[in-house]
Length: 447
Ligand code: MV4
Image (cartoon, helix red, strand yellow):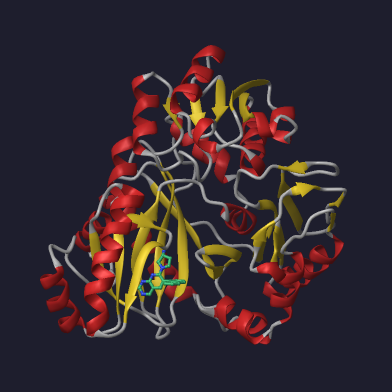
């Protein structure tokens, strides 16, 4: 097992990783920017290293500084968290070549799964249903036009180096295709340094469903129950839950079998997520694979009773999976992401001083946050302030506990998305579980 882990991240996830390390008896090194001196991850780590000024490019994304901090403190592993360098294959490779264990899969796994068209082709090989579309990267506009005619409109163009919704274009009429192809390609080139695009049939009312997996060095793979992630705005998830109200036991076992098959064909090691699109008619299709621990991992932890971050660390240290059969789900869990944003002003980020902070509690309530009373939210990073995760014997109880927690959560001095969550939780379609990825957009338009 590792002796000391450096956490190359900030905010709630840095704290989450420190907690896992403490329980595993591993020493921790926090790195922080000058804007994060008063952050809780700095307070709770065993050692701290300042890695640069506020802007991420000079601190949390600064590979030489991170490696120097690890060498200076004799850390034998680096946990990247999510975001920042978590899916940066180059960073993972630099860690490996410096003899520091990157906590995640190998750099070539990150690169391969980061190439979304390539990942799809591997899943097709495995016999997993994939979204109908181009076989790999589109060669030119001509081919795109031929394929669009074959599949029928609407179609969607996606950047192969994108993912999570970046660099996409929906095409509804043939005359839009040329412009969409050209602009999507140059956007992809500018954003990812890779102009490659692929095409898919566009589904109008899909759900976003993902399956948590763990893989060990010995070829064992386990997949846990799904997460429902359809409640999102501009590709930022707002509410996640497990299990999905749209999935019964039969469909669940098919999803789990598909996720395991996919992870096995690529010989996946570490924690990961297989993302699926679930069509309105109940058919599911592989979409992409994420090679990091995700923001929403706690909803899975609550229903399976396992600490996924601890497992992820154990797996990186070469230890064996302790369970190889899918675990039984217990009850229902929901997560609301509380962002420092003003929902009345188009969700504009709202950094600044928190004057008062009271965290909810009681049965079935977990809050993951790095914030506290008198904490000053710096302007440089994403606006996630806290995650409330509630657990109950069924969806109704988990929802009831979430409404109670949103009411108990008092944050003063800044605007947050708490009132927005309270409104969504009152919505009939949300309560009955009848929603898709367009729910939030419709909800905003009608309120
Ligand atoms: C799709 C889709 C419909 N059909 N793919 C969004 C996040 C990323 N993981 C993939 N996404 C989507 N992929 C096919 N074939 C619908 C979405 C999607 C979406 C697309 C455009 C604008 C907003 C969206 C919101 C949620 C999901």
